[in-house]
Image 1 (cartoon, rainbow over the protein chains, first blue to last red):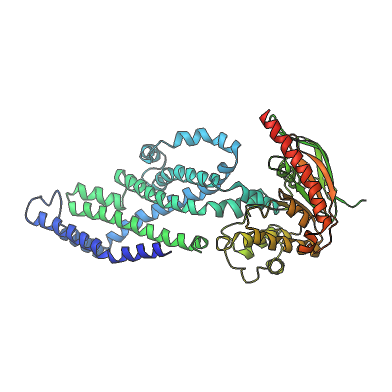
Image 2: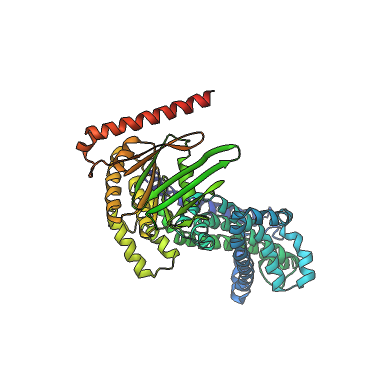
Length: 259
Length: 259
């Protein structure tokens, strides 16, 4: 406990260094652009990116793009997780189920979500469903693998004890396997959420009418490099913000681990 | 029809070429405290697992309270050496587990759990998680969990082997008083002769390769088995008789594994 306390304190007192490094980075960037080392068409100064952010916020288009992407990520990601958790637990516990599904999973696993874009456009057109499907395809298989792995790591003695106390197979799943692999599932989901964002941006870069990926692509079409950079910064910010939300969720769900 | 609680008839168990038990017969009467005594590798845990339904016999049959054991059953509550408590549940929730599986109403199961938590001397620790408990406390939770589930038979798989000598003695005394209060039929595994003498009403000594019962003795030492009883000539005589059998068996097994 003492060691943890010490490192926490250390991290707190060094936060100013991180702030300083960020400010320094922005200052050098601004200076490089102002002094004319780089054409603003290739890299706009931060001040110009801020100005673009301000004007787009005023028009309301900024929030519109962020929300469009965030909604797609949430729908696709949640759908993937909702299917992956029960299926993964089942595959993790049943050797027969594993044998049946293994070829499908092995085939899907190496496919990047990008490779689904042409087919998904054929099937769904440039629609929301098409974006959801890309996010789903990109998140589902990794989520499934995480859940399977987590399920197999559970001490079989706990399952045996639960069965001995009268739990049937379904109760074992709900009362032992699911809570038992929740810590691993959640840490896996943090990584997969990042993946989902990559999926949605690539889908929007190829074909979309709104969203951060579209905003970047559209900025490029009109040579508004500041819009492009702003889009990139916003992707980074939204992913960080989602991560904070998941961390809070983790603390709440895994209360027992902290005791 | 009779007072037999556990009936093991002609049971053999092999794992591949490894014949762990051959043609074993054993009857345990209602309310008996049977200690299975033997060196490691003699098949005593396998025998316990057969009674609990964790393993299926290769030949013969096991029945408990008149019913043939075909699957894991809540009729035989097992106390494991490694406790097997659910780490994400509090003491209270762990003890309620079996009742919850049987859909006993919330109020009633909380009441029952509280009664048994008190019986094992853990009043005040209801809301702690297992990680916050000592080994002895964890084992008491595990005993309360089985008691709350009201099984026909309680099975103990070397439950105190991992505990220090002082804690072990306290738990032995407590188990005896629980046995006297509840009148449960108990099958208890140990490799400690003293533990067997302290607890049992009957002792079955097992030999290895193949596992079988080589000596079956009643233990009629008076209760409580105080220091005085442990120094009495009856105690010492019983201990000597068992010690000789155990020594012979261990010697035989060693000779076999050398040869």
